[in-house]
Image 1: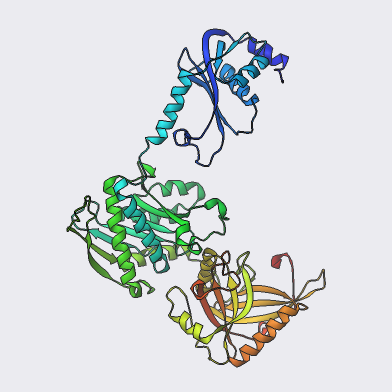
Image 2: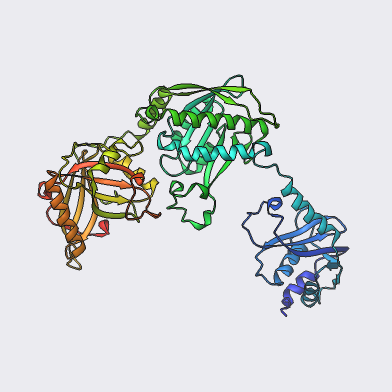
Length: 542
């Protein structure tokens, strides 16, 4: 058994001994997580030393279950030398524990400190403390009042299935007016078009919404973000993966998961209250009817909502009141839902002002940051009937150059990544006017003397982006290039770049039509027109 160093024993003996009895124990955290504000997934033990005479905790530590009995001694030494306020350093006259193993261990470790160590079957003060911890957790209000728990759970599922983020960007605000309600109107901001955070924020005032937007632009420094976030006056509904630990957070796109793998989280944010992860009955009622109206509106006005800029649209609904008894209520709640095109344009103008720069449009750059890391890249083809479907598919961006429909289909560069990274790629190409041409330019590695083909995409802004590096001697690539050349001849040079999500799902390498987020039609052109010569691979392209 380890004993305290002689110098430590001498130091502890200098601390005054008081005529008090201390209780000490080590117990699992289960049942106390909420009371102690410990994560639900935390696995560990709580070690407590309490002064029974004074009635306060002298020290407390949370340790992993693998830690030996030495941890109990370490916490005790804290209680002696550095106790929690208002206690002062002191040695107890007596210690009582309810665990024989701890008793024997302490007797060996503390034998030179003149402290009696006894066993008792119960520890009244510590028992009461642990009961208090457990009740603190159990007394916290539920996240949603019991009556609204099932209706809101079904509503959040229905909202997930209607996927309003496929139609609405976060600057396209929807006004929801509940007739006769103090909290009306509510301003709904849909999140998820960028594939990062999915959900709906319901602002309780237009001023709060505008102030938040302006603050995000003006105070975009990282240390200011928390302050800006907590300045909102709103309710929120967010979605998360039920088993988040099973996924790589960086590449996780919730929309690639099945509906039963996703759950909702609701709460409130207010500048004076902070984040509150639960709703009272009136709030739950308001959110329920607001979301019910929003779901109906999104499902019935897809054409107007898919326009860019968003079209003006308005609809009145009479929603049935949820009955609180077996007798179904015949009451109705009148709700008006409207788009706010002028507000959407105002927010767009704010973002445009922030993004303005003085770049020379006549200059172009050659970069290799277009294709996201861990993407699946291939040369492929889309049949013409699938092209017709994609041109009509709401969620697919399809800037057409009226490709000639000859041969089996349109030759394409297929890029499959996550939804969020696909959206960033689409936004970049859109900001540069679309795709002007696709080239294959010769390249070489001066160190290994390998010869390459560099796939290069040129945007209408004149910028050049490397989308792929292919070894000349790679037979698979050579066959793919032969097919590509043949198909481009049939289409009179028309081709495209296809951008899809789903790289982490079952459709990796073979995206479904529903995975395709954009197809930019272009022309396959001779790289000699670029006058780049043979490019040498450097660390910039590696």
